[in-house]
Length: 263
Length: 238
Image (cartoon, rainbow over all chains, first blue to last red; front, side):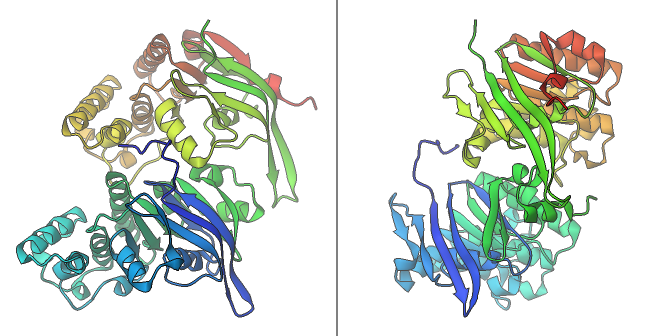
């Protein structure tokens, strides 16, 4: 099931991506490749450019410079920012997923959980009510939400359930790349553990590549193969997760790692 | 003679502490060694000499400041650890390097059985028969390491230190990888379990694994060593 290393085209190729807001450089020259099944954590303090990077890659904002290419199912790299908006939207609801920090940004809070899960499938032309409901039930189970809640709106769900519903809503189309912006912040620790374990299982089972923005180094340790550390819009260090955490080279990474309380 | 599975040449490790006025800590200097299949190299030397650091350099947990570290698993291309990409290192570890540390890094909610089976489950490709075979092997390892059956379905977070250490040994030895790194695997084990771990190490060497180990108990080192090296020899002369 492991993709052979000989497959020499990455899933995502990011080159020289930069973004400024007025005089302020929010993101400076970010470049990396992401391979199928690889989980990359982007860490750094608030305002370091993590979310700007995520949004620029996911075509949610237009970068001022650089390129983002994604490997289509036809085996060709496509220039994400050169596509039409219609093509970007199709990508965003089929091969990509985006899990927001605030579940209300990623869910329709007033329609049923089942409809939230089914929406992307309907967007792809599925109209059969029985099949949609059946798939929604399956996905609620996979993210550990009792299917009896299928007709309830997420407004009635706890924070942890909302995050899990957001994940189900995104994964139902079997995407190959998922973006996550601080998916566990704002949740109680016990609720976090459940979500982390679930994310860990799903990325492995689905051979899903993921870019996870987090300020929590423990989340990075548990989920990510690789890490990028950002400070003031720049990637200051990158590498294997345990290498960056156990043998940090850059002064900022050393500060970040040594500032964490060990429980 | 078999070609070396692990080769270190001119390896040095220094830590630069940017927040301690840029102090530089030299731990290892000019490490040259080779380990061949079937060998168990025991690292000797007082604590603080850099024995664990040496293992972490091989596992790519630490980055070498100088030198080359080459791992050449039988039947696949040699990997230059100091230059490999994260993706290549992830694959090298998954296929070729087992690392038994003193402590289990607990994963929330995952049962002891699944913690142990993980490496085999990853290789099973979701094939139900392979998954069941992986769990069956995990049961055998837990039994052999005397973890009571009533604990198998529980996450090891609440286990005793010795139980966690045995789960960790099972987790990291269940897949017969060609290179095994052992950092005090018997540190908190009783006599019976220590004997079992000695047997496991001898069996790994007999199947052709190359092993590098640190053992606090001299009798464990004596029982498993095919060769010894004093890590103090790799200190820079003061």
